[in-house]
Image (tube, rainbow, N blue to C red):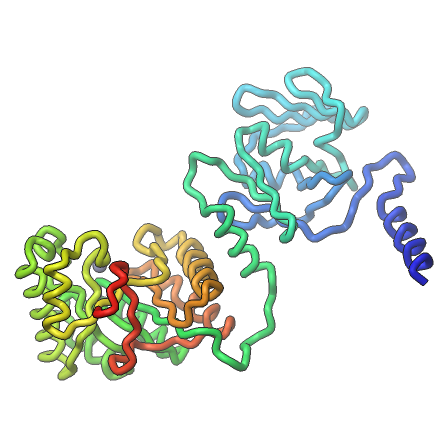
Length: 376
Ligand SMILES: [Zn+2]
């Protein structure tokens, strides 16, 4: 039986690769091409003689490669090099010297070019992710996600998982810093739409003008912690006295405006390296708990046109934390316009993946601080 199968397999494989008219052998495989941190869209990706090729005009648009076709010859000119392809002879040349292989081919009237070839010729690197059949084009001196994180990202978006696992994978705590402001109201309404709970760390100096937003947040069941009064590094961290005053004032204002006792703080810019031992001791003495975060969305860095980056940071960070065994994952976000744009997709993804979105529960405090201090 095994022999029969083998013969069959050989037959099928050889039919795929057979070349009847001297045309290139085309293997039908689902391939993906990425550029920096994003997957690129191509109408067709072909593996021809074990080399991944894409339509020239499409990759030219993605990578900004000028090309022109004159009398059956395709010219690519960039960075002082000239690559030419002659259709009749199917010959590719670089700076007038013919190559001994075919990085460029014409299939069904369309010109395809080798991804690896064109990327490296114009100064990019290419990393192959075998498991995900992905070639990633990148430039080392541009900022990009590490290959390790990018592989996690590929796993997330290329492995279509079963919808809504019955059992929760882990708890996720969305936390929003720097409000209240008009984006707090938007974030709150998005959370409501998805029946999701979150935690807000408000700035005392922004609270006074935003009473109605604060009331809505409280009414909808989210926890409010303090993020200091001023957020001003030079004031908050000036001394342990100024530090604890900022936190105590924030706490008092929350009590005054919402009637709620809060004990949770997120210190501006995170506890490390700003918090001194004396400041930490003041927090403990005054009954505070402190939350840093497990996953930084880095949302503040991006514009409204880059919301995909925010979503990607959350997805990769959460998957990493979950795989490391974390059952309570805290995500840092801000009340900003770009975050409101990213939030629906973030929540949809978390819920689809089976995470439970929770607000801070003071009776079940979870220790999460960069100081690894269990008294906080
Ligand atoms: Zn902040």
